[in-house]
Image (cartoon, rainbow, N blue to C red; front, top):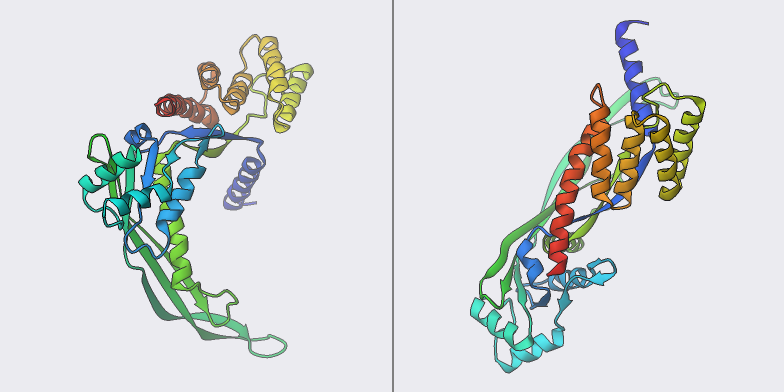
Length: 334
């Protein structure tokens, strides 16, 4: 086997081993990007100008459904109350362009902030092009021939100007133009159809709504963390069994039992096994106990002689997670 083939085979083996490594799925809270928005939890959303995609309703539904620990983060003023006040005050309910009008309406309906917007016109362009195909020249397929098929590429885009006004201060909390575009392709020999511009625009509006909601609210995100499965010391059979069983309990989400076994492993190795401490850190991170996880990751880091990528990554990640946790708690307490 020459050197090149050997290196390719070795790379494939390493890739396969990493792909099969046991992982733990972790859920973590991220603070709202627009910190000031979390101080105005009683919100009204007015009609958007040119809202042919129903963006107002999508944002309203997203904010209403945004829950942290099964509790709604925002309280939304009902549409009926907003429309009634606007009608009584004879204000044009189409985006509330003037900040003073938004403040006036907000005070009358008891909102802390008002969200308004303007949806831009949908854009859609179709481009004809050709793709090359190959087929058999005869029944026995002894020769191949190439040919072209006609295809269509459709690009659909929409944009929306969205702003959020603080009623008490009368100024803008957030204002930006959010744009989204999607590309679709279809050839005459392809069974998949290109969506109409109207359908594509609806999906793009959902994307804008989701992105805007994430800016305003703390939200969960999910990621996976790799466990260390191989002993870093000369484990005896009992210690190998402790590691093996702890990993099996982690796989079953039995973190309490896994923690006990890993603590036994720590004690039996005279607190010299970074594998035991690292896996303990992963268990505590999965349980949301970030300070304790950081403590274990630091010990594992100090025990390393050569760099271990998983430990270095965890060491840096947990500091960021603690910072996010503290910021999120402050936002939720407002």
